[in-house]
Length: 326
Ligand code: COA
Image (cartoon, rainbow, N blue to C red; front, side):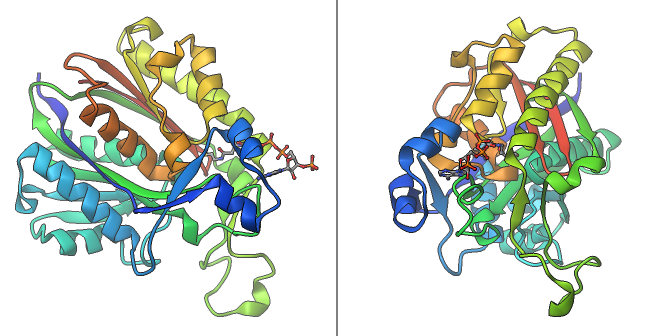
């Protein structure tokens, strides 16, 4: 049966590593607190002059090379991001230009940390409808430029990076079995960034009493995330008449290690079936799933026939799950 297939993966991480020990120099925090509460030991920080589209382009080139394709073979580019180069145009358009993917339609998807799954599902719909044949689905973020580096409760959590997959319609390995997405807009004040927009007109300082950085009520986010992630994972499995026992690898959004462990425990999934790299990259928002997927693939942790469960939770609130037969 013809379905969307993942035929290439790629990732791109900035070289600069920011360790917890370095954060101790500028913040009232310590390595032990950060590791115990989040599992994060270090994160990557984009260099000056390095933009979200650069990381996205780097990940896309790797994914195209693995798929054995040229940029001209792509007819859809989706970039999941909430930290694009500009308010608009879309970062996807900048990536299209960078790659010279001249045949591709390009636009961004804004679903915060769930963005990659939203983009994957959107690309899958285009492919199934016959509107596109091959899509680049990218998650790319530079959160280091929207966190308040004086706020120890948020800045320690995030990092920069990008991951990408190439999706093609056809038969064979990498079949996307289904995507399940949800949102609850009533919860948006628990996790957001004000930025510029109709609520905060550009240049009007008198109307901007809030600081422009990311804002989060971490405790509340934590509780809702664990419940929602396990519920949507079961929903995705049940839709395919599968159970948790069928899952070979969970590749979750890397929010923090305690959320990952609590979700796995709730699902009854053993720790060795959970892909974790949050210790090295922190929370890279929409980029975390495709980065983790690429690492799992290139390291040989993913084998042909494996059932891979992807799941994510983020601002909005948004959450979702997808299943892939590798
Ligand atoms: N270093 C040291 N102490 C810190 C600190 C830091 N980096 N950040 C916060 N604290 C302090 C707080 O000020 C508070 O001190 P107080 O008791 O004197 O007031 C104390 O630690 C406990 O704070 P609290 O916010 O209750 O901690 P927590 O156990 O909830 O952990 C998070 C905080 C952010 C790690 C946790 O809530 C979390 O992971 N939430 C989910 C966030 C997330 O993943 N968001 C993205 C979803 S996609």
